[in-house]
Length: 110
Image (cartoon, rainbow, N blue to C red):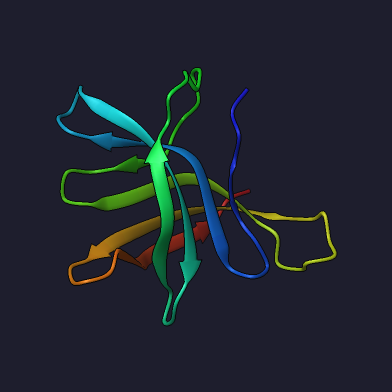
């Protein structure tokens, strides 16, 4: 079963699996946790390799240029609620000392 990408009301992003695309047909699967810093930027808190198969899920992809595409993200805007929004998000890596990604586009899915 595929675990969804989630964004909490505290703006912590959990990506249980994403493909780092080495070439158009070769990839390595990782997981990551990020936290909002400011101005729609997310800093990587932790990440690691995914050791097991994730099935046939449509996984987020990280391109060789470090553009991160998340095709489906569940955002829970209220901490006490089980209701969530489903969104598509694109982030771009910000070169520098920290592992930061900036949201460049997002849209609510129906």
